[in-house]
Amino acid sequence: MANVTLNSRIVTRNATAAQWTTANPILLKGELGLEVDTGKIKFGDGVKAWSALAYIAGSGEGTTVNIEDVIGAGTAAKKDVGTAEGNIPVLGTGGKLAVDVLPAIAISEVYAVSSQAEMLALTAQTGDIAIRSDVNKSYVLSADDPAVVGNWLELLVPEDAVLSVNGKTGTVVLTTSDIAEGTNLYYTEARTTANFEENFAAKSVSDLQGGDTLIHTTDTLILDGGGA
Image 1: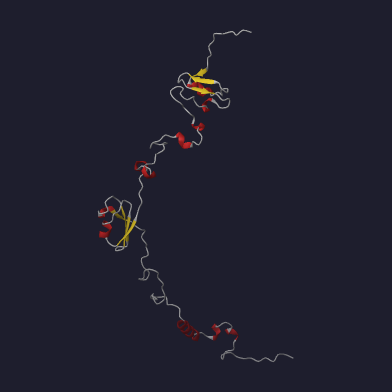
Image 2: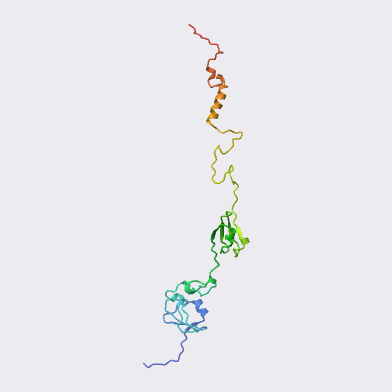
């Protein structure tokens, strides 16, 4: 049978980039897909949808590869380098971030000093604290210049309503020797004995429990022999 030559045109499957994205079809293995507005081409593999296929190198304005197709690429691979929100900053010399990337950080230090002059001579920054032993008070630096006394604000502590007990401060232990008796006298053995003896001597036998059953010298004793 003789060969027959036919004049024909082959139209490759084509659509705009937006249309491909909306349809997101799965091309047959070896099937060609053309983006008519970008000139980019993809080959189907019979498995992946359009969005998961890589463009053919050199097609259109350049080669675009889906990050998911790059082996070992992490989530950071989708981010841009920079200092704006959502960007990834780049480490500088020594593996450190640039100062303009870091937020302002203040680390407060505490200094123990024995005088105002020593406090004003400190190399301190705002937020640092000076504990002065000469006045038993603490101060915080509220402005940049530590040499200005007005920049040091006293840290106030809650006032204690009880400053002393019976003239004593600190850990106080009181005994009866520390407090005057006033109108109410303290208990002592001697006072108890004296009080008992004084009041008991003034009592009559009849005032005691069972006193009414006793025979007194003033009573008349009748001996009754009983009947027959």
